[in-house]
Amino acid sequence: MKQLIFSLLALLVFQNFACFTPEPPRKDISAGNSNDTPRKKVDSVTSIENNNKKMDSTNKFTDLNKDAFRLHYDAIVIDTHNDILMPVFLQGADLNKNNPGTQSDIVKWRRGGLDVQMFSIYVPERYKSNHFSYVMKLIEKLEENQAENPETFVLCTNYDQLISGINSGKFCGLMGAEGGNMIEGSMENLETLYSRGVRYLGLTWNTSNAIGTSARDETERGKRGGLTEFGKQVVARMNELGMLIDVSHLGETAFWEAAELSNSPIIASHSNVYNLAPHYRNLSDEQIKAIAKSGGYIGINFFYKFLDPSGNSPAIKNIQNSYKSGIRKFEGDYIDDPVGFNEKRYEYLTENKIEGGTPIDILIDHIDYIVKLVGADYVGLGSDFDGSIVTANELYDATCYPIITKKLVERGYTEQDIRKILGGNFLRVFKQVCK
Image (tube, rainbow, N blue to C red; front, top):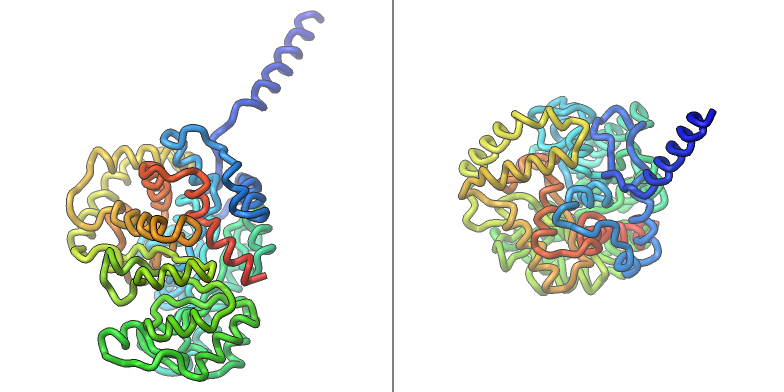
């Protein structure tokens, strides 16, 4: 009897001790099983709901150098631009499988710690007509995916839905339209996009349209004109609806008109810093300041051309192939341990660094530049994965987001600022505009 009592007492002591022994955050990294996905986002969400300033008082990790990857999987991670729907719709890729020919899919997002993906609703340039009909089919694809995978995937249209989805462990999808040509000059079509769940509209793509002049047309083809009268009406109606105005791809004249007209924050879902990479798709210092002044957001694009003026596509591809070949040898050993895998992968990348190409450090330079110019509250991630792009060396696919967090730690960023950059900044804007 005494032996039984001592055994019970020992068990109680062990359980009490275990309550004070933090376990590394665990997240389901498969696409099909959400039962083990932890409800690990509540603290971050509560901080954001109360005010980003309150995040300054919530440090969960005392040694970021050691716990960078645990921080990543604990944080809310959001990507504000991705073109995966093109290979899904046009080439038959499966959003829910680990596709060898895509940079992203739900399996890769899970392994990379992503919680929320803003899907780009985009019409390929080869389609010369019926744009609105085409985007309706894209939206239907995502709606079908939700219907077929209700336990693991949810499309969200407002902040409360998004928070609920994150905390239920589901992968959350948002929709953003790229290129105002798709509304075909119709305000009714704009309103239909909104009613179907689209929450931002990029006013132009590379080509100008009935809304306004694109950055490419203004810079390379000498077109001027800014926003049309219809474009100004579109900006006003988007404000009324609660739809984010996306100025990526927009010509500078039209940019300043949209910034002046909008009474809501404006965003650049996938753009970088012109002073570091002078490409027409990037933002000048004054544009960055204007976006920050509006309370907006800039998602850093992973495309090497927008990061690095000296970038070389063949060199990057060779480096990425070499990295992937080496990492493939051990990644299967860590299938249920994303933190351990990222520690091993980072060790491998560090010990087998290949010179040349466009290293991820250049992407961090773009984040640094914006933070030093306007503060840490206005920048995030807008990868442009699967948009026919070649990404920075170490960002070969969507499993690689944790490397960004590790690099931010090495640059001396605080836990609060890292959480903002990974997702908190976009959440703030989304909550304000898309209620």
